[in-house]
Image (cartoon, rainbow, N blue to C red; front, side, top):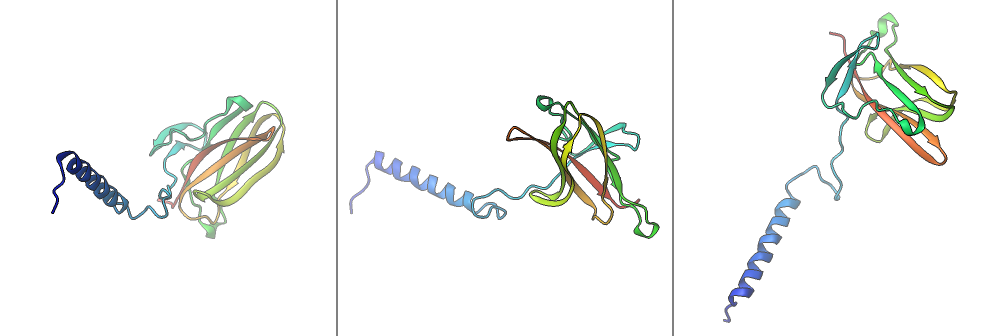
Length: 172
């Protein structure tokens, strides 16, 4: 039997170590399927009251409700947020206001997703004039959880999109 010289032994040991590490890493996370990352859930909201005052955040809301100055879009966080789900027996709707300002008339779309990539409802598709706009979003009949509200402007073939997370919760 022929023995490996020291340089060959080090290469073999190094290859064995790298191969073992790759095997270990490939089985370390059951959420990874087919080489894709696990689905991320929406998390974090900016807390706002009925009158629009802000009250901090729950979770990471650092990317929520960002304005897009390049297209003259100013966004105000949804209010109230969180939204308490109203009782269906009373016939009271579960609503929040989404406010934004357009510097010029724009073609836009406003929609809600219940989880990443899963559209739940369209709130608006069309052209809106320049100025301040307040839309009442009705979440009556929706389940508790965090929803993502998207606002997208389409200009010259490009989409400019911002979003904010909204929490629906049961009454205390």
